[in-house]
Image 1 (tube, rainbow, N blue to C red):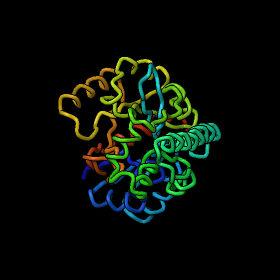
Image 2: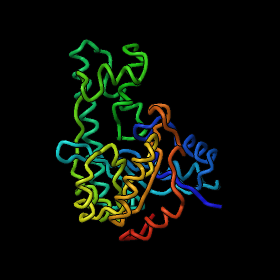
Image 3: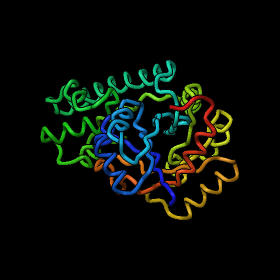
Image 4: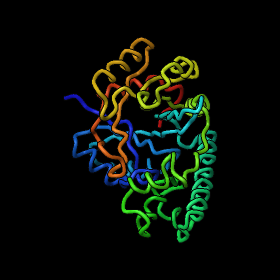
Length: 277
């Protein structure tokens, strides 16, 4: 029987809303054999998910999703199978997390200027399971305190990229993220290239050490998937995939909506420059 993996899942340790326990239960219920926890700029949700899966028929592999930027375009880099305790990657993650904390403080200041004056930074930080605090945590407080009715309104009215309280994230370049992942013994994959829309940069990412692209992604037309299959085959890249599930926070996707055969995990392991964890 073919085993399947979902290699792009977020928990409530970053901007997902599901606990590690809920992620494990949903993964098992849809027949997955392997998942990767790829929280934004943190690895703190991985061990709790591994603990929740202990004794169950589910493998949990190390992952992360780094937010990067190049040519004024967001580019997300997925890292897999690296050493979570590596000093350099730990330093890189800490830099991101500190920037996230300062970003929330700046957004609260902007909200105060708009008359929303009853939200404190420590309240937002308390909602996050880790230091990877983000806009969904701030949005949850806007809902709780009655300023908006739901997440969609919070982002549309205040926190979206064109909103009056928006503050850009700190970002490194894709090349820096790829280097961090590789020197920690892991492999780097370009997340959702159909959203990034910077295909011309893929060769330069490969020169930096990129080994795969996320071909199988939720809600993509068949011709889009075939287009990226072609790019992957032409360049010898591993074709990964995952749901990018954030729980109810993200519409139209859920754990297992996009998955790949387990052989993809084996291919990623073969490309690791160092010991995996």
